[in-house]
Length: 96
Image 1 (cartoon, rainbow, N blue to C red):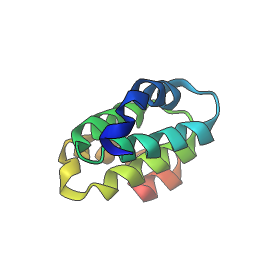
Image 2: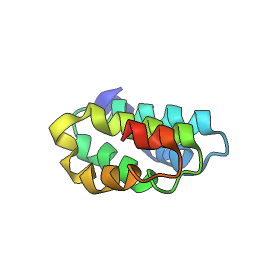
Image 3: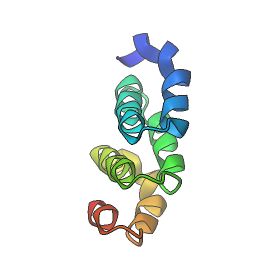
Image 4: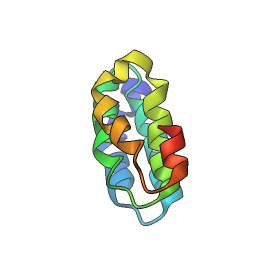
């Protein structure tokens, strides 16, 4: 993980954005966070982009939880997290 894994970034982003299996999208999200641990802005931007777009509740919950794990570094995510508080699914609303 970290800088040594950056060569996997494009593949991870592709899986995160478009894989058919929600579990793989979740795993890709977690891996992106690990890969970009030293530069959280990159992972935060990808998570913000995907939060409203993912059809799977479990992926949206994971994204909210990952964003929350950044604490104050995730300030750019606040608008997306506020919108998530009105998500159609109560699990996403609760996580947000």
